[in-house]
Amino acid sequence: MARMLQLTWSGLFPRKARPGQTLLDPSVTRMRVGLLDLDSYLHVNNGTYLQMMDVARNNQIADLGMFPVARAKGWAPVVAASTMKYRRSLQPFERFEITTRILGWDERVFYLEQVFTRGEKLCARGLVASRFLDRKGNRISPIEVVRDATGEDMPSPELPGDVLAWARAIDVAHRPTAAGAGRPA
Image (cartoon, rainbow, N blue to C red; front, side, top):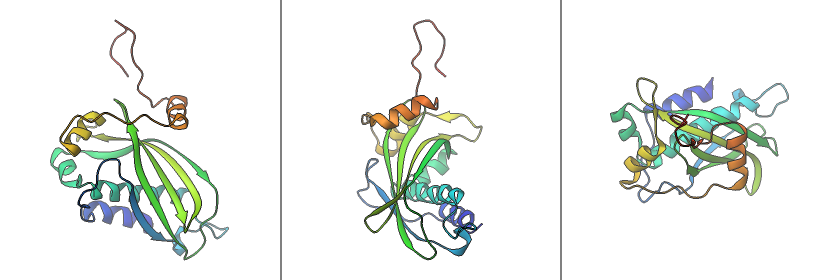
């Protein structure tokens, strides 16, 4: 419940844009494990990691100064798919960071990596396929979002092989159509 309140707060009252922040720069969110984050084994519940990642993605949008643009256009960020790998548990009251970065995009989604660290130690890594929807629930092309964020048509960096394989395996990657086969999905 506490992370849901934090998520709501980060959307309604986003932190200030970071001058000079570019689309491909990492965004860092610092947090501390609270008692409401814990499961019965006294470490952070796996579902809570996803809520923390939501907050960190809101902070990334804020760092880029994209909240006013998204609000004006009626865009809402949503997750199309995600996967997690857990390495070390986060314990009560520990401080940690979530580093969020855009790895690239295609015609359908943005691909993000979100890494949880405690000091120099890797705790968890999440991959997220994310997109924006308009008020009617229509997908906004990441290419349009990039254009509004940067003021230019910026090509996506090449995706790392593991991310590309993941995107294809879970069927979120752009699927080029054969000539005359109809519109892309």
